[in-house]
Length: 210
Figure 1: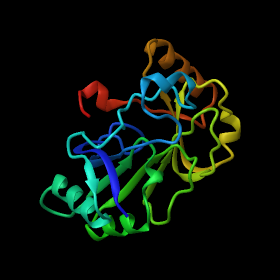
Figure 2: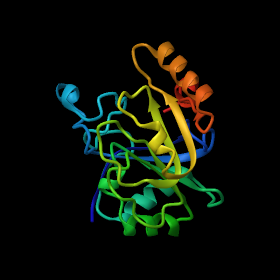
Figure 3: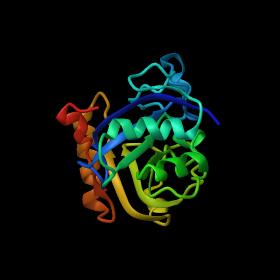
């Protein structure tokens, strides 16, 4: 199987429980909830995405012939040494492309594997850290993992029902939108009223990182 990657880069994880951790990000092209084209945003299930995942023309991106090639590229971005290697597979929607061969190839290179998914496609086995970020209006089938990260506000999200899903951590992340202050206030208020949830911020944007 070949893989379409929008971009690949070394940075610090900016969100969630692993915020601040050194990581290679592999951003796959394509998503099943939005085409990525602005002309289609208003009719998309997910209308607030702030990520360019269209094509394979980003830095470090391209079409990789097999899983070994993706893993080799990720290892090159990490650099010397295999200790504490961490890779984040994201998108777009990475589960459109992640398969057992890719998981095995990354593990063979010494990577711990994190995945950020919208949860509408079942996760493959072998992922070390699974973060699901549900989108209102979609059907979430992956209701178990390590971290559930809900971007807020999202009208139509049933936060009480989500607490019945099998996750280790339940996180609320303020939406990066035109009224960021209101989104932050709403997220803080939700956590204050529902202490099962924890607030997470996009630290990489504050720090000027990718």
